[in-house]
Image (cartoon, rainbow, N blue to C red; front, top):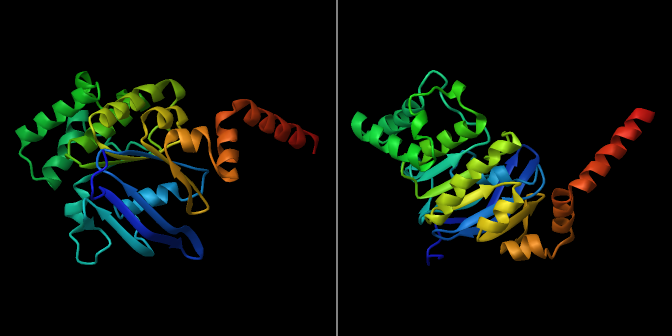
Length: 265
């Protein structure tokens, strides 16, 4: 599955915000067609890593390559490289005054210079892929959160990316809406899309990821198959994180204890 040249390569990546060092020398490769899920506690640097991959955040040091092209080269045509990278955020970022189809055609026409008819055909094709063909003329306000996120995925796919980056794509959704979004992501994985996914959805990571990366404190603590990292973690930090995430009873007990302490004060 993994090509000789990685689709994504991060080497010695550092990122600081003032005195706050968020990434501390990240080395990571993602092969063509590979699905890598990045997990870890809040503040571990997961989203910053993802945003550095397409230079939404400028690294403080290190190199980022996508498809063999160095994004951190000062002379690179960053807009040309970004056209090969689709990104889906926690929030949907749809234009509320535009229909679903218009949300998909606008970036195609402005960035890729596609004609109106071609952009509309591509929009319709990708709405079918995410199961929302019947919502082509709807406005975002009439859609559920899960439907809006699927429209956001379709919009990214309409640009013809070689790589898809997902930053907690289900974290803003009600639990009953998560499944449809994850189903679309499973479909993309089955189709061979190269994907980096920051997520807390452990079932998805177990079943779909080729590799799972656990981050904490701005470094990669573990990197391996889902069976290795989730099923049999080597490091105490990973075990502690997963025990809290995978054992709701423990979280409930901690929350109840906190409430009792707060009530007695």
